[in-house]
Image 1 (tube, rainbow, N blue to C red):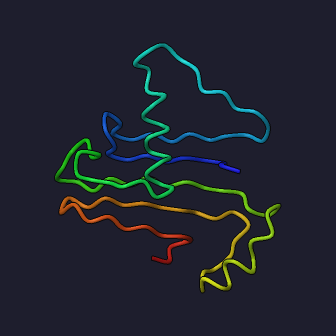
Image 2: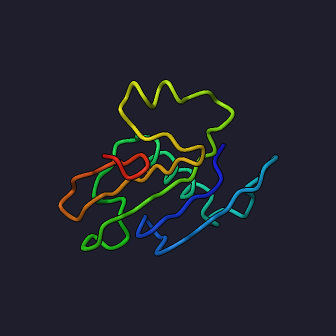
Length: 110
């Protein structure tokens, strides 16, 4: 379950932090309120192809970070097979550098 989303230098967003409580969360708003930007950032975090047009300021890196609660999903074996550190609250981070390169991290492991 997604517990939090942090976005820096993405599209029109300079800096944003959103926390999600347990249960149903709805994101609503008028046209142009930014709902699609949140979904776009989440897509990048989960592996969507990235390019420099994703950054608000192309001289600064774009960072999108999500905190996921994984305790209920029995993923310890998967993390061990991938040689990753398992944490019940796992942090996935995606960075898009000014050079256009993209890096992804799970619990600070590339």
